[in-house]
Amino acid sequence: MKEVAETATGAFYLDSAFYKAHADKLKFNTDGKFKIVQFTDVHWVPGNPASEEAAECMNEVLAAEKPDFVIYTGDIVFAKPAAEGFRKAFEPVISRNIPFAVTLGNHDDEHDMTRQEIYTFIKDMPGSLTGTVEGLSGVTNFILPIRSSKDAKEAFILYGFDSLAYSRKEETKGYDWIKPDQIDWYRKCSTALTAKNGGKPLPALAFFHIPVPEYNQAASDENTLLIGIRKEKACAPVVNSGLFTAMLEAGDVMATFVGHDHVNDYVARWKGLLLGYGRFTGGKTVYHDVPGGNGARVFELTEGERSFKSWIRLKNNQVISSIHYPADFVKGGDSNPFI
Image (cartoon, rainbow, N blue to C red; front, top):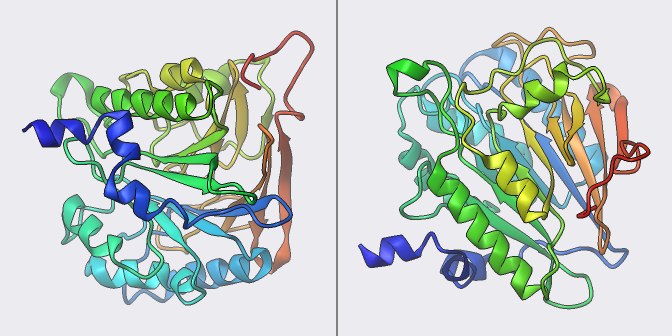
């Protein structure tokens, strides 16, 4: 029991076999740049020709952007056999030898594989950096460091969280929420990484599937600068478990990016953090009435800077909604000591 509990502590995690094994997999290039592509809500249905639209989109985006890393933020498959759907959804990335990781969505385990079975299936795929933490709620919880171009030190951090699926409580029907033990794990790991960096929080991004309640708070505030498309309210849990607050207090995470709501791809700054969506990547196997069709979100990181650029890439080489964070969002008097 003691061993399981220890895996959730910050210092222990940074000394874990998973963290060490993946410590040198991601690295800024000699120009100090690192590019990420986020695919979300692929909703692959094996045998349905409509799913090929998702493959076409992913192949076009990867050919154009040539990313260093790809993150899939949930709802990857939408029918059984799930294993076939996962293979098809990851094929564009695996065929190009691009490292990737996965945070599960609420639909992924509704078919013929449990969350644990999905993780076991994915973790050994070529290029998969998807991790888990024993003893934590959910399965796809992990930290991936991006190393400096100059040495082996961590220069940037990517957090992945399993936002689970549906609430099991009658009083709080709807979507589940990231649990207190996951948030405690994040706090401890963030604290350990900050201490390792001489007391200065490392710049970080966080990825998961279901948005936190603050997405709706941000979008409903008339003073919030919102860039992108918002065609539906964020389908967030009714319970606010405190992840946003934990990140604000820790000072490392600059932004969170989710999927889940197919006709949203906006970003909005709220109380010092950027809350963002990816772009629906799937084909016509599920609703996605959004102008321009399916696509992906792209990120460009610069080593040594607490900032990033991001844009949406659609099929046919169309690029929309380009931003530079935080420069495009800072107003007079709106400051964050961690930016």
